[in-house]
Length: 327
Image 1 (cartoon, rainbow, N blue to C red):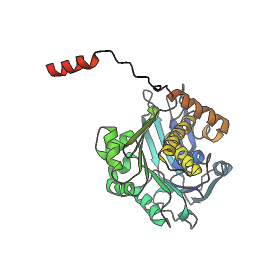
Image 2: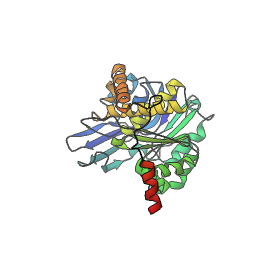
Image 3: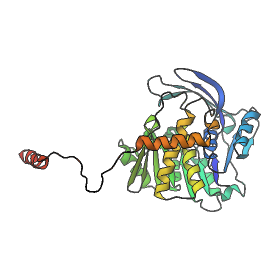
Image 4: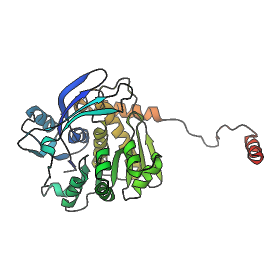
């Protein structure tokens, strides 16, 4: 296999200012795996209840996702309900959270899963993330992890151990600041980077993403959309595009990381156009290429030509030096 992802599969009930959807397919693994499967082989490990719909299992199978690690047990599947703000699409309120069969789930990896080249630890208890890491036969080529504020607040020390052992960290920009206890995003990302990861990726919602790698900073905007239907799963879809791109290319160079970040942003722009995974599951190659190229166009500008300089009013330096001396 190419990418192994461990996390949750569930059902969401979502309320937005314009519409709502009840008991639609969701969960970090769902969004991540469908996005990553556009580029490479993906296997998932998680748990669902007896109420998990056969049509949803077929959907995963139709995308070539290895769901043999999706265990079915007695009980109800994980459920989440939330409402998005009418003033800021990045803000949402959790109305209900039912862990159900996910509560206390401890995955045991198969021999093949323990040999995965790329590992994604979706948002979950950091103790579970460490448990998964401890089962790998050898260090994967790339390990990435996501988390949320509940673990930052409740299991900070355990989460810190996870961050020391992964290559890429995905966090919402507010979570980056909260974990680092630093209000400046760049400095906060630097605090986490110094703990051991190769890259810290701060997800910024409609403003895109910031990636810090060593002393290099790369910022990618979000693809501009006239209408956002449902932001649920955008972050996991972003991570799926990022990891899938890297795994498919087999390239972990700085340039590959930047391209993967842009592709992750492009994938995230699709999923928000419909509730659940409806739009994400229907992406075609031509649509992906069209939007990827459009992304390049909206971020392209002309640099300086040989011998050309930036405009600078004559005498500006002397005037500024005189101002500095007078103050």
